[in-house]
Figure: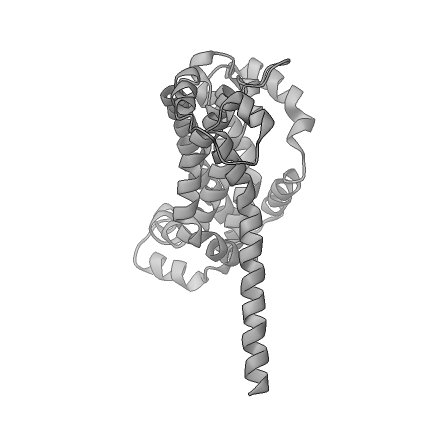
Length: 278
């Protein structure tokens, strides 16, 4: 009986700590949403309190000044196109390197893994110079190509580990049934990659959607700006329009938060079946 009570008490304590931890992580969202409904003066004088009057007009003005539908469309196009190319191309590369472990493929895989530790800030200037030489500056598709290059190392790493966990017997059975090399990949291997592919898409979506640095380097035309660039317009050298910046931030993160909450169950499953087994 004493053991059962101690176990129940321990579980209650763990649940209480988890709830407390969850509340701590929700505090930034409280400040963001509450202050997005205040006037500029009220944000400066009482940032933690409840709004005296809800300033719903902040959202309408932020929507207008950021050209939100246009920025949302640009961000959506960049995110979707980058994810599709990353999953398709990196899955084929990972499959080839995992199933044909030649010296060249092992070296190539090691290069992908090593590239994961290179900070983006170290190659910003070469990126701009190379992009200018290739003529992909001020282009949505040029930005997609850059994301393809920088997202490939982690994507290949995770997909490579998953492919190694797939039994060879499945592929051999497909070849006996008459599948070609491409048929084996697209009909057998790629569908089996769904858990890790969804995980990769979630992680890359959170990165690409919220990224400011790379779009600010590649895109200079206002009609091509993504949501993070449009939001940054509220932060000037001498003034910061918090009453408009915070609603713009809420509008910007809402789609990706909804997407994450809808797909989060695949993250642990995909990581467990991918990089851990690899």
